[in-house]
Image 1 (cartoon, rainbow, N blue to C red):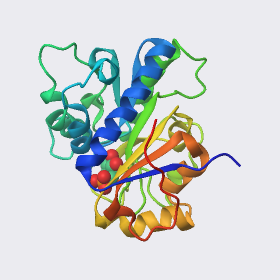
Image 2 (image 1 turned 180 degrees about the vertical axis):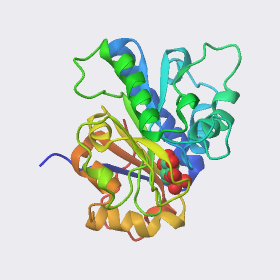
Image 3 (image 1 turned 60 degrees about the horizontal axis):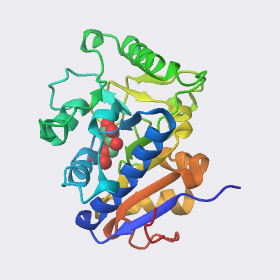
Length: 261
Ligand SMILES: O=C1O[C@H](COP(=O)(O)O)[C@@H](O)[C@H](O)[C@H]1O
């Protein structure tokens, strides 16, 4: 059995953010060394705000550079809504992070969903899968895309991306991107990376903060119970790192590591 997922706990978002920044930059630099670009997938929910706090602070030196012009940003999941809708994960990332990037730096290449296909979630998912095929094809013989990093959230029910507990979608084995039309959390219609794609990523980082996550963190780390986040932990092992605050893991019996790269 491989090593377990890393659990890093911080006093609050202010201390978590610099560690998350260092981690993302190390994944970025590894991606650039491997293939000259950094392919990262991001979630919606509470993640973009924390990510912005981590990445928008001024660089403290040569080893601390966010090289935005080398980033290719994908969405780990997306709601089937227009790109300027209040429920859109793209709109959220744009408002929290992309719109705040300094205008004088080279901008990242961002891959939102194609809003021409909002009437048909299956077609939307297929189209997004084609975006991945085109982007990843040149570098692998692509059975599965290999993200350099997936930055994920963990819902209070243990869902991640739009992979919900006990949902049939957890058993999807062939699609890279799949539709879901009966999401337990609104909005109902979404598309999501599938579990094999998530588990194939070079690194996976979860960010979960606040006492509201405490119950589910206990279940994920102590029982597993087939929860989507636990399934990712089980397969990715030490490739997976959790950035949490103390409130989210109070009373959770699982070794917390001091953060170091
Ligand atoms: O619906 C969603 O929720 C999850 C978790 O969100 P959080 O606010 O509890 O962090 C998020 O990761 C996902 O992208 C989003 O579509």
